[in-house]
Image: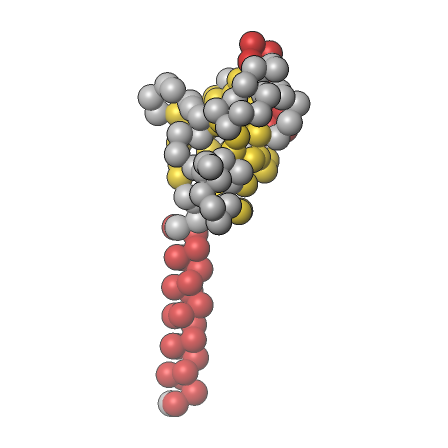
Amino acid sequence: MREWLVLALVGSLLLGGFFYLRVHRFYEVGIASWYGPGFQGKTTANGELYDMFAYTAAHKTLPFGTVVRVVDLETGRSVVVRINDRGPFIPGRIIDLSYAAAKELGIIARGTARVGLIILWMPKDGGDG
């Protein structure tokens, strides 16, 4: 009886942890878009020159330097980007990817995709100063 109780307790903790991870996996879910040739070489919000072939992205609030995994919720494909710009400025969109990141994610032709964001690393100093 005691072994059964221990097994039930451990099982529920493991299962509960599994559901917690599945439900709370993403920092944010929404629409991703991309920007490219028209911005090449222009200054981003953090002062860098935009490079459409780098794995970078624009986000409204995440600190500059934050590293994020962007997961396409339809295909499961993902890409890792560094936040170096602000945007997107279209309602409902949560991240603007560089051309290279969008190409790896496979959304160039579609233009947008429903994605989830996973924060992999965030600067201790907030990244904006």
